[in-house]
Length: 289
Image (cartoon, rainbow, N blue to C red; front, side, top):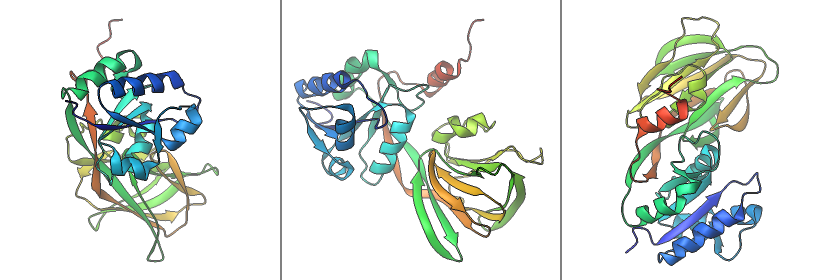
Protein backbone atom coordinates (compact mmCIF):
# COMPACT_ATOMS: atom_id res chain seq x y z
CA UNK A 1 0.00 0.00 0.00
CA UNK A 2 1.50 3.30 -1.11
CA UNK A 3 1.85 6.07 1.48
CA UNK A 4 0.82 8.58 -1.22
CA UNK A 5 -1.89 7.80 -3.77
CA UNK A 6 -2.01 10.89 -5.98
CA UNK A 7 1.30 12.49 -6.96
CA UNK A 8 2.01 15.67 -8.90
CA UNK A 9 5.22 16.19 -10.87
CA UNK A 10 6.54 19.76 -11.11
CA UNK A 11 9.61 21.07 -12.94
CA UNK A 12 11.37 24.18 -14.15
CA UNK A 13 9.74 26.45 -16.72
CA UNK A 14 12.78 28.26 -18.04
CA UNK A 15 14.65 25.36 -19.59
CA UNK A 16 14.07 22.32 -21.77
CA UNK A 17 14.38 19.59 -19.18
CA UNK A 18 14.83 15.98 -20.16
CA UNK A 19 11.28 14.74 -20.67
CA UNK A 20 12.54 11.17 -20.28
CA UNK A 21 13.20 11.83 -16.59
CA UNK A 22 9.60 12.97 -16.05
CA UNK A 23 8.14 10.15 -18.10
CA UNK A 24 10.32 7.53 -16.43
CA UNK A 25 9.36 8.72 -12.95
CA UNK A 26 5.69 9.03 -13.92
CA UNK A 27 5.52 5.47 -15.23
CA UNK A 28 7.39 4.18 -12.18
CA UNK A 29 4.86 5.84 -9.87
CA UNK A 30 1.96 4.41 -11.87
CA UNK A 31 3.44 0.91 -11.51
CA UNK A 32 3.39 1.48 -7.74
CA UNK A 33 -0.36 2.10 -7.93
CA UNK A 34 -0.25 5.91 -7.84
CA UNK A 35 -2.20 8.30 -10.01
CA UNK A 36 0.10 10.86 -11.62
CA UNK A 37 -0.48 14.41 -12.81
CA UNK A 38 2.02 16.88 -14.28
CA UNK A 39 1.84 20.58 -13.55
CA UNK A 40 0.42 22.20 -16.69
CA UNK A 41 3.18 24.70 -17.49
CA UNK A 42 5.83 22.09 -16.74
CA UNK A 43 4.24 19.69 -19.22
CA UNK A 44 4.11 22.36 -21.92
CA UNK A 45 7.66 23.62 -21.38
CA UNK A 46 9.34 20.25 -20.98
CA UNK A 47 7.29 18.42 -23.61
CA UNK A 48 5.86 15.82 -21.23
CA UNK A 49 2.86 13.91 -22.63
CA UNK A 50 0.84 10.86 -21.64
CA UNK A 51 -0.25 12.08 -18.20
CA UNK A 52 -3.05 14.18 -16.83
CA UNK A 53 -2.13 17.83 -16.41
CA UNK A 54 -3.31 20.26 -13.73
CA UNK A 55 -2.64 23.81 -12.64
CA UNK A 56 -1.61 24.53 -9.06
CA UNK A 57 -5.23 24.82 -7.96
CA UNK A 58 -5.88 21.33 -9.29
CA UNK A 59 -2.75 19.96 -7.65
CA UNK A 60 -3.76 21.55 -4.35
CA UNK A 61 -7.17 19.88 -4.59
CA UNK A 62 -6.15 16.38 -5.69
CA UNK A 63 -2.48 15.63 -4.90
CA UNK A 64 -1.17 13.90 -1.77
CA UNK A 65 2.45 14.70 -2.66
CA UNK A 66 4.29 16.97 -5.09
CA UNK A 67 7.63 15.84 -6.52
CA UNK A 68 9.69 18.81 -7.72
CA UNK A 69 12.37 18.08 -10.33
CA UNK A 70 14.76 21.02 -10.51
CA UNK A 71 16.69 23.16 -8.09
CA UNK A 72 15.93 25.28 -5.06
CA UNK A 73 14.21 27.90 -7.23
CA UNK A 74 11.72 25.30 -8.40
CA UNK A 75 11.07 24.26 -4.81
CA UNK A 76 10.53 27.89 -3.77
CA UNK A 77 8.00 28.45 -6.54
CA UNK A 78 6.11 25.25 -5.74
CA UNK A 79 6.13 26.01 -2.01
CA UNK A 80 4.59 29.46 -2.47
CA UNK A 81 1.91 28.05 -4.75
CA UNK A 82 1.02 25.09 -2.52
CA UNK A 83 1.53 26.50 0.99
CA UNK A 84 -2.19 27.04 1.57
CA UNK A 85 -3.03 23.47 0.50
CA UNK A 86 -0.73 21.53 2.85
CA UNK A 87 0.48 19.35 -0.04
CA UNK A 88 3.98 18.19 1.02
CA UNK A 89 6.99 18.54 -1.30
CA UNK A 90 9.95 16.32 -2.08
CA UNK A 91 12.77 17.53 -4.33
CA UNK A 92 14.86 15.78 -7.00
CA UNK A 93 17.99 17.85 -7.60
CA UNK A 94 18.53 18.95 -11.18
CA UNK A 95 19.96 22.32 -10.23
CA UNK A 96 23.27 23.34 -8.69
CA UNK A 97 23.68 23.29 -4.89
CA UNK A 98 20.19 22.07 -4.07
CA UNK A 99 19.85 22.77 -0.34
CA UNK A 100 16.15 21.81 -0.54
CA UNK A 101 16.28 19.05 -3.15
CA UNK A 102 17.39 15.94 -1.30
CA UNK A 103 17.22 13.24 -3.98
CA UNK A 104 19.76 12.86 -6.78
CA UNK A 105 18.58 11.89 -10.25
CA UNK A 106 20.60 8.68 -10.03
CA UNK A 107 18.80 7.48 -6.89
CA UNK A 108 15.40 8.95 -7.80
CA UNK A 109 13.47 5.71 -8.38
CA UNK A 110 15.00 3.91 -5.40
CA UNK A 111 14.31 6.84 -3.06
CA UNK A 112 10.75 7.34 -4.31
CA UNK A 113 10.09 3.63 -3.93
CA UNK A 114 11.11 3.74 -0.29
CA UNK A 115 9.10 6.91 0.33
CA UNK A 116 6.00 5.25 -1.11
CA UNK A 117 6.52 2.37 1.31
CA UNK A 118 6.41 4.83 4.21
CA UNK A 119 10.15 5.15 4.77
CA UNK A 120 10.45 8.94 5.04
CA UNK A 121 10.37 11.84 7.47
CA UNK A 122 8.39 15.08 7.32
CA UNK A 123 9.72 18.47 8.33
CA UNK A 124 7.73 21.69 8.73
CA UNK A 125 9.26 24.83 7.22
CA UNK A 126 8.30 28.39 8.19
CA UNK A 127 7.23 30.99 5.63
CA UNK A 128 7.25 34.77 5.89
CA UNK A 129 4.47 37.18 5.06
CA UNK A 130 5.53 40.55 3.67
CA UNK A 131 3.33 43.60 3.15
CA UNK A 132 4.22 46.95 1.61
CA UNK A 133 2.30 49.82 3.20
CA UNK A 134 2.17 53.20 1.46
CA UNK A 135 0.39 56.12 3.09
CA UNK A 136 -1.23 53.66 5.47
CA UNK A 137 -2.62 51.42 2.72
CA UNK A 138 -1.38 47.91 1.88
CA UNK A 139 -0.30 48.02 -1.76
CA UNK A 140 1.37 44.60 -1.97
CA UNK A 141 1.34 41.34 -0.02
CA UNK A 142 3.12 38.04 -0.57
CA UNK A 143 4.61 35.00 1.18
CA UNK A 144 8.19 33.77 0.96
CA UNK A 145 9.95 30.58 1.99
CA UNK A 146 13.54 31.81 1.77
CA UNK A 147 13.69 35.54 2.32
CA UNK A 148 12.39 39.05 1.83
CA UNK A 149 15.06 41.45 0.56
CA UNK A 150 15.17 45.23 0.37
CA UNK A 151 18.06 46.45 -1.74
CA UNK A 152 19.35 49.19 -3.96
CA UNK A 153 18.43 49.18 -7.63
CA UNK A 154 20.36 50.34 -10.67
CA UNK A 155 21.52 53.71 -9.31
CA UNK A 156 24.27 52.12 -7.22
CA UNK A 157 23.86 54.29 -4.13
CA UNK A 158 23.22 53.06 -0.62
CA UNK A 159 19.72 53.26 0.78
CA UNK A 160 18.75 54.27 4.30
CA UNK A 161 15.98 52.71 6.32
CA UNK A 162 14.68 52.43 9.86
CA UNK A 163 14.21 49.00 11.44
CA UNK A 164 11.77 48.33 14.29
CA UNK A 165 10.91 45.00 15.91
CA UNK A 166 7.62 44.61 17.76
CA UNK A 167 7.22 48.38 17.75
CA UNK A 168 10.65 49.06 19.28
CA UNK A 169 13.21 51.03 17.27
CA UNK A 170 16.34 48.92 16.59
CA UNK A 171 18.56 50.91 14.20
CA UNK A 172 18.87 53.43 11.40
CA UNK A 173 20.82 51.59 8.70
CA UNK A 174 22.64 52.87 5.62
CA UNK A 175 23.61 49.94 3.41
CA UNK A 176 23.04 48.23 0.10
CA UNK A 177 20.01 46.57 1.65
CA UNK A 178 18.65 44.14 4.22
CA UNK A 179 17.84 40.43 4.02
CA UNK A 180 15.15 39.01 6.29
CA UNK A 181 15.55 35.24 6.09
CA UNK A 182 13.83 32.16 7.45
CA UNK A 183 15.96 29.24 8.65
CA UNK A 184 15.40 27.70 5.20
CA UNK A 185 16.68 30.91 3.58
CA UNK A 186 19.68 31.17 5.89
CA UNK A 187 21.68 29.05 3.42
CA UNK A 188 20.71 31.23 0.45
CA UNK A 189 21.41 34.95 -0.16
CA UNK A 190 21.82 35.55 3.58
CA UNK A 191 24.70 33.08 3.73
CA UNK A 192 26.58 34.92 0.98
CA UNK A 193 26.19 38.12 3.04
CA UNK A 194 27.82 36.51 6.10
CA UNK A 195 24.53 35.73 7.81
CA UNK A 196 24.18 32.85 10.29
CA UNK A 197 23.15 29.35 9.26
CA UNK A 198 19.96 28.65 11.21
CA UNK A 199 18.85 25.05 11.69
CA UNK A 200 15.31 24.64 10.24
CA UNK A 201 13.79 23.68 13.59
CA UNK A 202 14.97 26.91 15.26
CA UNK A 203 12.01 29.32 15.63
CA UNK A 204 13.91 32.38 14.48
CA UNK A 205 14.30 34.90 11.66
CA UNK A 206 17.67 36.34 10.62
CA UNK A 207 18.17 40.02 9.75
CA UNK A 208 21.28 40.37 7.61
CA UNK A 209 22.52 43.81 6.43
CA UNK A 210 24.01 43.91 2.93
CA UNK A 211 27.31 45.85 2.90
CA UNK A 212 26.41 48.17 5.80
CA UNK A 213 28.16 51.55 5.91
CA UNK A 214 28.78 51.07 9.64
CA UNK A 215 30.68 47.82 10.13
CA UNK A 216 29.24 47.38 13.62
CA UNK A 217 25.84 46.57 12.06
CA UNK A 218 25.90 42.81 12.38
CA UNK A 219 23.37 40.08 11.53
CA UNK A 220 20.93 39.26 14.31
CA UNK A 221 18.40 36.47 14.78
CA UNK A 222 15.06 37.31 16.38
CA UNK A 223 12.01 35.30 17.37
CA UNK A 224 9.80 34.09 14.52
CA UNK A 225 6.92 35.64 16.47
CA UNK A 226 8.41 39.10 15.96
CA UNK A 227 6.88 41.72 13.67
CA UNK A 228 9.65 43.42 11.71
CA UNK A 229 9.00 46.87 10.23
CA UNK A 230 11.40 48.45 7.76
CA UNK A 231 10.68 52.04 6.75
CA UNK A 232 12.44 53.56 3.75
CA UNK A 233 14.04 56.80 4.93
CA UNK A 234 16.15 57.85 1.95
CA UNK A 235 16.46 56.08 -1.37
CA UNK A 236 16.77 57.10 -4.99
CA UNK A 237 16.17 53.53 -6.14
CA UNK A 238 15.07 50.91 -3.59
CA UNK A 239 13.49 47.61 -4.54
CA UNK A 240 11.78 44.67 -2.88
CA UNK A 241 12.43 41.02 -3.72
CA UNK A 242 10.94 37.84 -2.26
CA UNK A 243 12.56 34.44 -2.86
CA UNK A 244 14.56 36.07 -5.64
CA UNK A 245 11.43 37.40 -7.36
CA UNK A 246 11.21 41.13 -8.01
CA UNK A 247 8.14 42.91 -6.65
CA UNK A 248 9.14 46.37 -7.75
CA UNK A 249 10.24 49.78 -6.55
CA UNK A 250 9.86 51.18 -3.07
CA UNK A 251 9.34 54.87 -2.34
CA UNK A 252 10.62 56.97 0.53
CA UNK A 253 8.18 56.56 3.41
CA UNK A 254 7.10 53.07 2.37
CA UNK A 255 6.94 50.58 5.21
CA UNK A 256 7.63 46.87 4.68
CA UNK A 257 6.05 44.73 7.42
CA UNK A 258 7.47 41.21 7.71
CA UNK A 259 6.22 38.48 10.03
CA UNK A 260 5.68 34.75 10.15
CA UNK A 261 2.98 33.64 7.73
CA UNK A 262 -0.04 31.77 9.05
CA UNK A 263 0.77 28.91 6.65
CA UNK A 264 3.81 26.65 6.40
CA UNK A 265 5.10 24.02 4.00
CA UNK A 266 6.03 20.39 4.64
CA UNK A 267 9.17 18.81 3.17
CA UNK A 268 9.28 15.05 2.76
CA UNK A 269 12.82 13.72 3.28
CA UNK A 270 14.04 10.34 2.00
CA UNK A 271 15.46 7.77 4.40
CA UNK A 272 18.86 8.68 5.79
CA UNK A 273 18.38 12.44 5.40
CA UNK A 274 20.54 14.55 7.72
CA UNK A 275 20.60 18.35 7.72
CA UNK A 276 24.22 18.46 8.86
CA UNK A 277 25.30 15.83 6.33
CA UNK A 278 23.66 18.01 3.68
CA UNK A 279 25.63 21.05 4.88
CA UNK A 280 28.88 19.08 4.83
CA UNK A 281 28.22 18.01 1.27
CA UNK A 282 26.98 21.32 -0.15
CA UNK A 283 29.47 23.57 1.67
CA UNK A 284 32.42 21.15 1.37
CA UNK A 285 33.09 20.97 5.07
CA UNK A 286 35.68 18.52 6.38
CA UNK A 287 37.25 17.99 2.98
CA UNK A 288 40.67 16.41 2.88
CA UNK A 289 43.03 18.80 1.12
